[in-house]
Every structure is written in structure tokens, then in C-alpha cells.
Length: 399
Image (cartoon, rainbow, N blue to C red; front, side):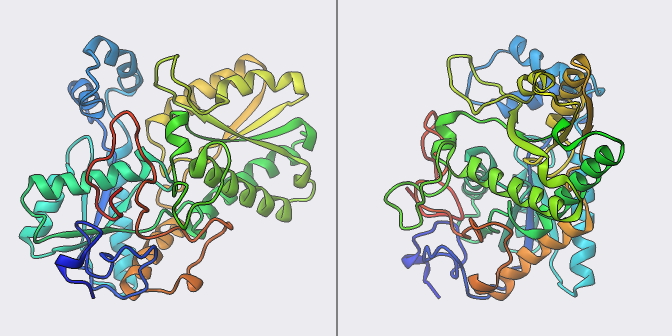
């Protein structure tokens, strides 16, 4: 155990405070902190929500309205809060099924219920050793470090930094429970097109994820000089993790469906929101769709690989814009499901909780790619946002 004075990981439990990449010591957590992005639940919420998302960037409301129409198309309601309510209930049911007596507190980064509310509620109930579970699987600033910064900010602003600790489960991009729902969805879609007469060389699978600034992608994962650094190529850990999972999915589908091994696939990006002068990860999903007929493609399978559930980037950017792009060029198209509350996914999340409750050795932790299992305690300089700089963050070594 590490005394508070010896801790090099701020806001951490004693077992995680020494900075070891993997915590192989059992921790008696009091509760789980389910951390979400948040979303509006009515037309009046849309602009205030978008102000929260873009806080500190000085974006005027008239520009926010350019994004607001995505939400207004759905009556101002993002599906993400309802999905997190369902996920919280599913986690509670799976924990109870396994006899794990841990409450689940849910808080969002950008809309009610806020993380502040969840952490204060936990502390008032006497639950002070928390295990964070963010609804994002991959390594980048927005999908990992920003949640860790939120944890640190909340503990500081609520005055609970001396009494409450927050650790975080490892990034779960290649946990079998996260991967399996994608395998199932791609298998069904590819098998359906092939059985319907589409030839393997006339079918393309597009694995889609949220684009991020290239500079942020390059800084995802451990940085050069860190013992855990690996040269993962252009796009850093963020792109490499998606590519590795896509390869696993396609290999599983090829094993199950005759002829599927000949189906080609690509990793594509969506939902870009930065200025044109700032490089972001490419290619864009809609640009790729537009070019597919020229390559002899007749049908496309769109896989929301970067997303845990069907929130706005899936409903608008894929189900609306990408499907429209496919229709415009005469392509048949199917969008496969996100994990949502798939039993395999929910069970996998509880597996991750049990890893930390039991101090499971690294060698015994399941992972579907050669990149995993990812670390429990983030490395000093991974996932930097160079525009905002480093801020205090929980569950990781300070830069």
C-alpha cells in the first residue's frame, strides 16, 4: 500500500497511487462511477448543452445552431441519456447476478445528471473509493484523458479531493465483450448481402469512428520516452486500436462465413467539427462512399466501431448523412448495431470491474488484439490536447 504522501497518481486509491501501469492488487471499491458525455432532452436544452460542450472556446450561439439542427431534427432529444439509464440498469442487474454489492452512480460531462452530482451523492452515502467507467472505449483526449480531467476537476471543486478517490477501468477497445457485438453485426450484414447475391468483390465494409485532430491522434497513447511507448504509426494509439479491432472483427467473420475473407474493408472517419485549416483524421465516410461505385462496389456495410451506443453521431452522421450518401450513388447499405446493452458488452464491463476488485494479473486479462490489455493507470503524457495543455487528471501519472 502507498501512503497519501507517497502517491504519484493524484486522486487515486492506494493500490493505484504508485503509478504502476497495471494494478494487480485487489481494491475494495465502494461504488462504480458511470461517466457519460450527456445530451439534451428537449429543444430548450440544445443550445445550453452545446455551450457546455464547447466551453472555453468562445463559439457564438449562431455557430452552435449549425450543429443544433442535428438535435432539433430529433425534437431536441439526444438518445444518449436514455441509453445510459438503460446501461446503468443493465450493469446493476449483472452485478446483482454475480453477487457483487456495488452501487452504480451515473454522471455526465456536459448535461444533467452531472458528474458533480454523482460524486457528491456517492460521498454523502459513504461511498468514497470509486471506480470510474467512462462510456468510451479508445485512447484519445476526448475519449479518455478528458474524463480523467473531469474526475479531478469535480473532486477539487466539490472539496472532496481529500476524502474521495477515483480510479478508472482500462480502455476496453479490445475486450471481447466490446468486440463481440460488432462481430455479430458484421457477420449478419455481410452474410445477408452475400446470400442475396452480392459478390464478395462487390461488397465493402466501412468501420467508422469519430474523427479527431491529427495532432491529438499522434499524442494518443504513451509518448516517446515512456517505457510503454510503441511506434503505432500515423494516428497514434487511437487509429491503431480501431484498426486492430477491425482486423479481429473481419477475421472472425471470415471464419464463420464462406467467401467473406474476400470482402475488403476500410477504417473511415466521421463527425469532423474543426476549422478547415486544422488537419483531422481522414478519409471521411461520405467521401469514401461516393467513390465506391467506381471501384465496382454494389453494397456497403457501415460499422459504428468507435461508438458504444446509438447517440447523435450515429443517428445523424451515419443513419442520416451516410445512408443518404449511399442512396445518392446507388449503393445498398446497412448500418450494424452498436454494443448498447448487448449482454456480452454488459458482462464485459462487469468483467473489467472484477479485474480491479480482484487485482487480476495482467497475464489473465482477456484482450482480443495484440495491443492489449491496455493499462489501468494512464502514462504521464498520453492523450495531450495541445490547444488546451495538460490539466490535473485522475487515474494517471502527471505529465
